[in-house]
Image 1 (cartoon, helix red, strand yellow):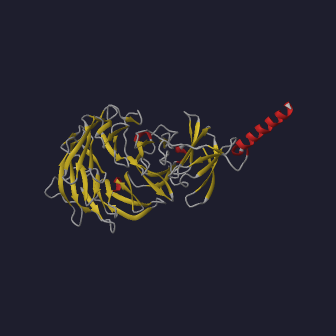
Image 2 (cartoon, helix red, strand yellow):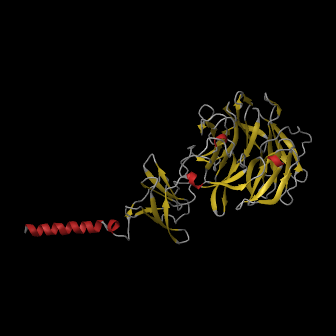
Image 3 (spheres, helix red, strand yellow):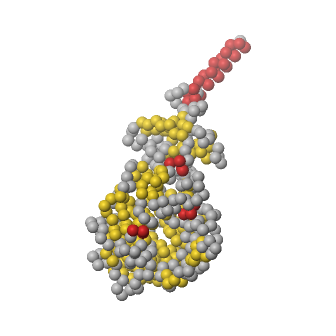
Length: 472
């Protein structure tokens, strides 16, 4: 009797085991391991543009992630890590997914999924680092390249050394025949493009010029009735008007500045200045728009001091907010003595980021609450190296900011919604020349774009006069 009961117990346990392990012993199913996001339906890896695996050293984990629309909403994805059982995970409502497992920098995995069109895919992924994808010298720019733009599937570069704005094929980066030639020795500085391909370019010594996409012949903007240009810098376009800032330098070494101003320009057959707004701080150098307001950044007085002749700020700077309907300053944010300069907005226009042209610092303003989050007292510090600056801030549609530290040949990334430096999947700075401490490239500008069907960051270096490509 006892032996019979024992057999029944063993049979019952066996049945329990058999009903509990179809996900573990068989190859047809896997253990259901559903990742539950804190925000259901919202990607937890918004800056991912392709299937990627990264090693998170602090956690001892490998994260495998795929971007939005990679698979169908809430669809099942299978991940097989060598030595482990197949794992089923559920994609988010937007088709992205994230899977974490214990691993190291040598880990691999096989991912199976169905794309939104119903096609099945299987791909082996290995842990990589963001810098591994950097392609150095994918194209050549002109002499003393300064700024980089993408318009009408062309890359436009301001080559200050030849007084030209030249165009390059976006995919091949070969120079095309289209160019804007400014007056000799004018030193073109910045440009802005309208949706139809027309644009406007500032020059340090030759005024401001508009151009049309048919012949790209520059037309000088008239200042009749207003102040003549001294050294126009930044420019932006909003609606049927353009906005240009002039720092009004009177003397260098030492730096003496007059009152800087913003010029409102009416483009057309006879482009002209139609209004001016004086700035409350000195040295306005940069201007951008969010489609509603104009943002003008004033750097304050900056001079180059011995013995190293590093750029040194002497007076406060900040950001003015201008209502284009009234041409009046409707808000101001003082950031302190720290050379605020280049600007970029988060995609929702809530956060304004400002790079410093006297240090590797970034400042942050919450425009929604009219609150300065990071100024010179608590900046976002990208590097502690002296004698450098942030030459550009560029933001992707997803909200990833690229920020270079010029003298170090290093590019950092910032989450524009949180202020986090080097978020997933970047995780680390991109050193363009990791084997040298000397300045080799000089990242001067960059733009997030798509080339040959691949999304990434196109970088322009002014020292090497080259293009570089970083898939993101």
